[in-house]
Length: 88
Image 1 (cartoon, rainbow, N blue to C red):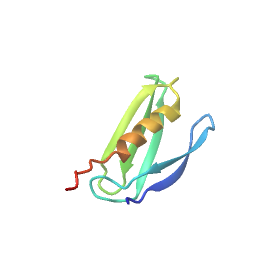
Image 2 (cartoon, helix red, strand yellow):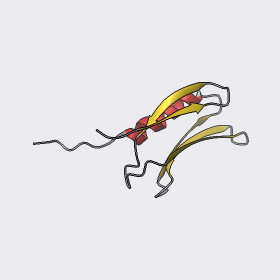
Image 3 (tube, one colour):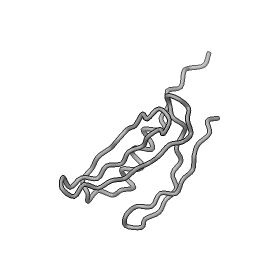
Image 4 (tube, rainbow, N blue to C red):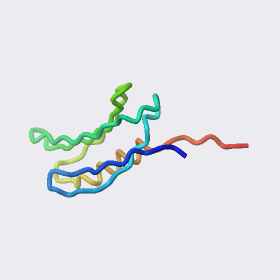
């Protein structure tokens, strides 16, 4: 079973929820960061998950009015997805 990192995530509007991130799919590092940024000039919100070792990252973007939890759930699902080989 693969180890996961449990963290609490708090949005700007003080919504707090727990998320679980698996280690990096490329290097196996468990030091993963989750960043949420708003750009009021472009009226977008970005959520990025990044390995602090090999620096691979994935970003998802949405409108500022979009629920932050939706973006976080989307990026966490992408990060945690792993291809499983069929076992004979």
